[in-house]
Length: 136
Image 1 (cartoon, helix red, strand yellow):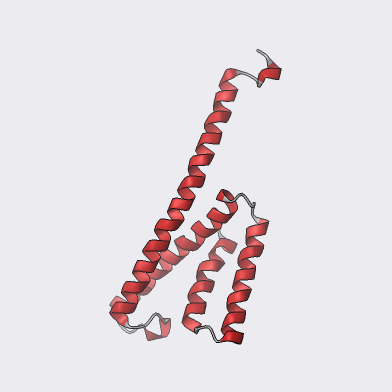
Image 2 (cartoon, helix red, strand yellow):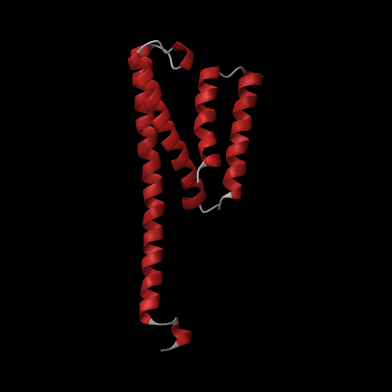
């Protein structure tokens, strides 16, 4: 066995397999994010068309509650995928994305209070963006 040539052939093959699986994970994270983004957009659009509002204070029917819980499910997954995308695919580690997402939340709050960003929109954006901060 030639240690200077990179170790045992089985070890080199395992390292190559690991690099390949890492590349596939990074590709799938981006695809997952795009799919979840489209599904979230579709679900929220359907909720707005059917109920006329996206505020939790306007939920009066079981259908509205169903839309709400679907939105929670999709936005939860979307926020997690966003965190994975930034941390893993863009390879920023975990501290930098945490700071980025915290800054985005601060910008949303500032836009709401200073620029009068719609409260419902601000809540949903903040909800999505807080998920990467708490994702395991």
